[in-house]
Image (cartoon, rainbow, N blue to C red; front, side, top):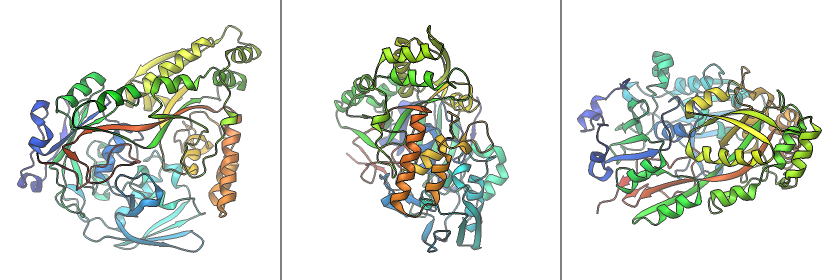
Length: 525
């Protein structure tokens, strides 16, 4: 069995030993001061915050890395952005030059030294490099990033962006890595990531667990927990049983009503329903037959019964999508009028008109992640009623992410939340620069680019109302082209035992998992 890991002298001196993985029942959190978390996945993706876009990894990055700024713990609202590695910042009147003043004395994990402006410059340039980042297109407006002095960073933009702070928050490309570690490790950095957050990498066991230990030098103070054991448990029943028995303190929940109601009945347990909602979307590859014919795409849209999804998933935890940009995002437009009603007769007529009176068969690659798979199975059944056969190949989650980026799936079910502004969602999923297989690829699986002009124009528009109008036009154009089929928006579901105090009030988290901070702790009986 492959293992990668190390232990600092400081951690050992504090009595924090490498976490034993063999007997989970012996690792009850309150007894060991180790937080046990159960995740619905067979394994990690890539433990590099600039490369991985998977739900499984995002929460972990939130515990290990910082950004220049961050969302206040427990919030997913841009209105709560506050200092993180930067103590303060200012921008020019035209929004093209931003200057960040760094905290002094911030230490990189595992004795990699003090974090300075050079680390910020390296990290942001890395995030903008398509060879080293999955989010490079987000940073195309970054003209220069320079270290003015060891504790001052200046960013110069080629044009204003709707929310510069959103690109430097502790999220996706905004996570700051330590230059010395990244350069020393090269590709191995994704197996032994080094940041500055409250918890630091200890050991990774493929298909079993990831262990983190407390960072005793964390600039906000040493964590109250000694460490985190993040366990990959794909089986819903096994994960639930471990939670009920107390082997797991915090659990990733099933995004459906039945699970929520059942777990709420357990004694001394809190179910946490939080923002942001992940919108489940079926992206249709418009570049190849038969989906290059808009009539086939329309036929699929008419075959969707969203009320059935609501009944299946649960009306307390999902809401029907009203656009290709999620509700609550700045720039979201309610375009429910463009959502075709459920109509199997119209679906059949469109297929026949397109030359497929006997239906079509589409190859689909899909993740084994339970919360997504059950949604796709409902969609598959709905399409079958319209004589649209989805030949589905179910693979492990990281394999799914790799293969959909190779255009191997004609329909891509993607469930995603992003920084809550229309520009980022539209750019990553619908701009031609983000088409998979291109040098600047992100997550444009539909190969649509018919709203590029509106997306680009909105990015430099300084009038807020005109900017919103451009975003609405972009959404309308893409929806009229049936680039994708928005289904519903699913809120994040987690549960915890009441002996775990998160240390803040939880309403949302862009990392899709509850932040584990220096203040998170177990409550004494």
